[in-house]
Amino acid sequence: MGPPGGTTVKEEETVITTVTTVEPIYSRQKFISMAKKSIFGSACINFLLSLIALIMIAVAAAQAKINIQSVKQVVDDWGYQPFVDIIVRNENCRSGEVTLFGNYYNGVRSGCDDDLMGYTPYKCPRDNSGKKKDSSCKDEECKYKISGFSGSTNYDINRRRMCGVRGGLPYKDAVRADFSTGQCPSGYVACSSRTSVENTICVTSNDLGSCPITYAAFATQN
Image (cartoon, rainbow, N blue to C red; front, side, top):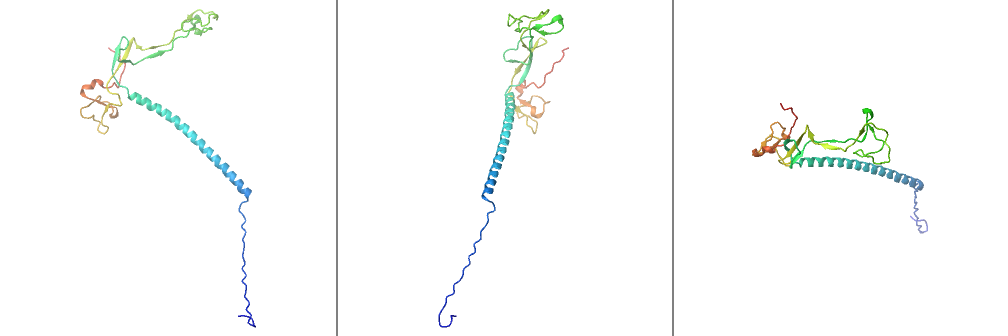
């Protein structure tokens, strides 16, 4: 409704705008400091994890090396033919035979045994034949000289030599008994009835001479 006199007055609307200022939680310097600490902490954690990983790799590599050597030995052993006969000879083993026993003797070093009371090495270095390596070197007085000799391997036992003969199939190719029944396949017989199922070797009846030797002993002959 307008005022008297017919004059119209337009009312202006007042708009109030409220501006809210939000204060930052962290200052710029504090943020940078926290970021540096976070980066440093992450670097330390990564370094420790890398170090642990390297240690684990080194341990695994060492174990793998040992295991590989053990597996290689097993593979090599199972690739050999077994011994099927042992022959006692008064001479060297013949072609196709393997000397079963041998004992290595280290030899004797040149020296002096005064009054047979004890061994004393020569003052001057000598070879195995007892000859001085330096002729100008002067030894002390020695009553009983010992001439040295190099080592050697002795294959004889009571002047006898044990010779082994290999034959049959290698263990990796041998025919085995059925683990559940303990029986050899059809057409095969067990080499021994005294062996366990896992150690039983099966051969044909014509190949019993190729059964591996599983036991040997020294006995006094009457």
